[in-house]
Length: 266
Image 1: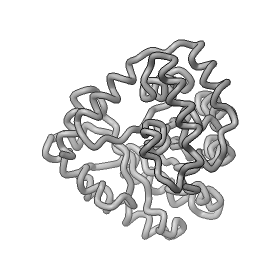
Image 2 (image 1 turned 180 degrees about the vertical axis):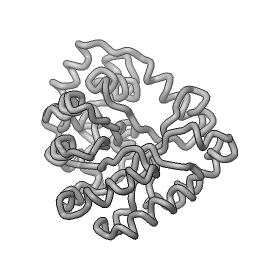
Image 3 (image 1 turned 90 degrees about the horizontal axis):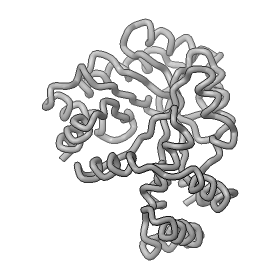
Image 4 (image 1 turned 30 degrees about the vertical axis):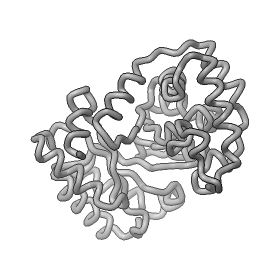
């Protein structure tokens, strides 16, 4: 199935794939698919260091990168990210030098960091040596938009990759299927569902259309369990939404509770 999903993405023009050392066997699975398709040297792969690594251990970091390259079957990575924003505190304590050595070794093209908070995104975007910032954003979670993160990235010529575009699937979930422990989220999802019906657009179309309008310079990360999900996301991405609908989203879904936005609190 994994190869079929990658094939569907590739034939539709997707050439960048996101993975991580800490995502089980995802690097091996992706590497096998790329090898079977014969495109390992044509794709762009972004991975993340295992968060349990000591980022100030140069040997461990270098070895981890080599192991990723071997698992993926690629000569170099397009990007390697720090998995946690807290690691930025180590940047001037030796981490910058360690990561720079990986760059000049030609095993990775860009260095980046995965963040959760807007202030850490701003810090990363202002840090020399960091070229990629991955962050969560969706129609409910507009913290980075409000903090001017996307404008700053454009100004500083940094790359932004948006994850959690459907808020871990919550935005597309049937209200009846929301787990009992997350009843606090039901009123907001009911409101989004109602907004979707009134607008004549699916929730998926609103979610993707909003990002396309509000963060045109960013790239969007989506996952898929089947080739059909890849096709559906791509079809939906091409759906235009109006400026007035974007304005409505901002008005109706402003000030969403942190408990809903942060999956760590679920």
